[in-house]
Figure (cartoon, rainbow, N blue to C red):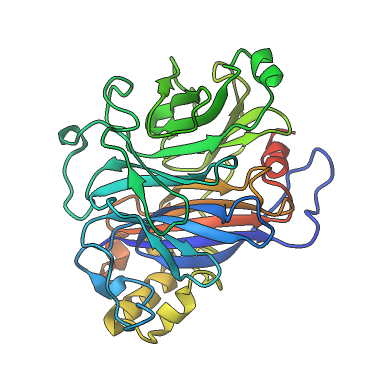
Length: 387
């Protein structure tokens, strides 16, 4: 089975950066194991009493020994499904807030909160990662789910994006809300009723316009793609709209996490250095988030799985080949504190076997996720990479 961890990068106190300097962040460690790429978001939206939640594309399959956390009523380690599926957890303690009903057999997901309606939207591509099939054998569409309370989830009978927009399998998607004035949008040639933007694998972009905020329909494709010479650019992308400057920031990459920005999706500016690179020395520390320390200790978990988790954490040079699958939070107007920014990323072996000199450890292909936390706004953190 694939092993998946989530890691954290944090900068406390003042950012320590003068104007024109890069705002730093530091790694704090892993916070989850054997789950897919996560999306952080603030819930409830526009509420000072809210908290950070983490959307996850889970894939525990039939190996529920690696599942976490235990059911609070029975203390049993029972996944919601033996197919890949979507769920939401509390970032602080790791408790499951919600399993997305109807998401069984989907993967490559992401979540976004509509700051106007308060709905949580989830997007995903049809793929049961517990029963893998080749991408060209899968239906070409993206489905949307939504919830107002994260108890009951809804989905439309039709895909949010289908073959009329997508020319190939979508893989990863990410969506951001656009809360800008019509004047600012018109100034750069974008539709004045633009309210959401989606980025997809391989640098594809789709826009959602009009008075309706129903994200299960109404998407149109942007002609052309994001272009860069950076290796892996456009893979596993995520997008942030900076209302402060009008820029759309995109992070992506299959080997390192590249950072780019645009005002109009026609002209792109690329940061000189990657936002995140592999760092095995720090990527296997254990953070206080999502309950990984308890899982590592073996309390209330499968003992064999806990032992393997400790072995994986102790040998990061065996499996960390690159970083990928990035996301970030939070946009101004989301309700989240404006003096903190999160960046999630995934150190991994990219599905390959560990290095040959580690064969005696019994490791399998390994994937991790990482998150950076800086005491500044997300826009300022990203903007500092452009001088």
